[in-house]
Amino acid sequence: MLLVISFVVFMLLGLPLFGVIGLASIISMIGMPFPMEFIPQNLYTGMDQFPLIATIGFVMAGFLMEPAGITGEIIEVAKKAVGNIRGGLAMVTILACMIFAALSGSGPATTAAIGSIMIPGMIAAGYRKDDAAAVSATGGTLGILIPPSNPMIIYGVVANTSIAGLFMAGFIPGFVLTSLMCITAYCIAKKRGYQGTNEKFSIVGLCKAIWDGKWALATPAIILGGIYWGVFTPTEAAEVGVLWTLFVGLFVYRKLTWKNISSALIRTSAFAGSATILVGVSMAFSRLLTLYHIPQTVGAFLGSISTDPTITLLLIAFFIFLCGFVADTLAMVVVLAPVFLPITNALGIHPIQLGILFVVCCETGFLTPPFGANLFITMKITDVKLEEVALRAFPYLLAMWLLIIVVAACPDFVMFLPRLLM
Image (cartoon, rainbow, N blue to C red):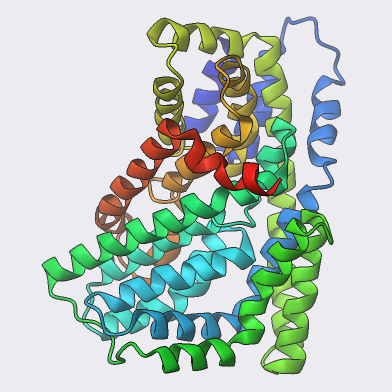
């Protein structure tokens, strides 16, 4: 009980999330028979995870891709693929985010890279600022569902399940969610009177754009193909992605400068420092939850409501959704996955299905105030209030919840590719 109370108090005081989790863990140990080295040992164990290097590598690659010219090539391909359909620029943004997601593994990085280019273009074409911000923030959430995905890597470590299997399982839900987002964007464009792009769809034009962008589009093929064919591990794939991006930016497009590289290194270092300590304290916090028998308590509570796997997964999804209002994605995965895994394992739910449900639910956290990371990024680009962007993103949240229901109700929807290819 002290653990929960101290967590809520420190959260209300506005402490950084790692401080909230760390201090709550320490205070909850008062009067308990735990050795003093419990926290530092678990902190070190949480940070000393080889796959964590993969998340840092993918983020580094994402920071390099925009100055390298790769982002621009991706957007050109997306424009040719969409043509002049109503709401085309919004769909281009979503498709570009989907492609970029296969390179970065990060939702905020995807939002920043694509949104910084597409939002001014949408506003110039007559889109309202809040609509342009909302579609960019929403498309950016695909950064953690389309593999490679940083939360999938963390979940794979915590759940001791195949990261490659999680990547495979993310493809079909990722493409379905992209389609749902595009349909939503079309409906909004039709209601608001937004027109399409000035370019008609042409197979020849699309093929030319793909050929011109072959170096950029080869990046996800190298990263994901190398993982699935067993050429390298996800961690090695992240570093290969960085090297490939440097090669393309320096020697093919020749747009990448040493200043860009230096800036990417500084931003990556900041991410690495904050992410690793957050994962470390979250691992210690999660261990305390287990010792306090929280998973058993939660399991008994959910069991009293329903033992149906679909209902249980939907209840878990709703709880993760609520946590997304106040917690960071990586922290939610590290803290909550060990709580829910024993429950879902007892019901025969595959850890990969739970992992994909986790990731889709975490996506919603990027779009919910007051801490939605993607909302803040697009808010700064457009100078629009946070609540206005969140309101315009609500229809896309409904599309995400439709996918959550499908993931919870249809295990084969998630498990088809892992079972087929592994």
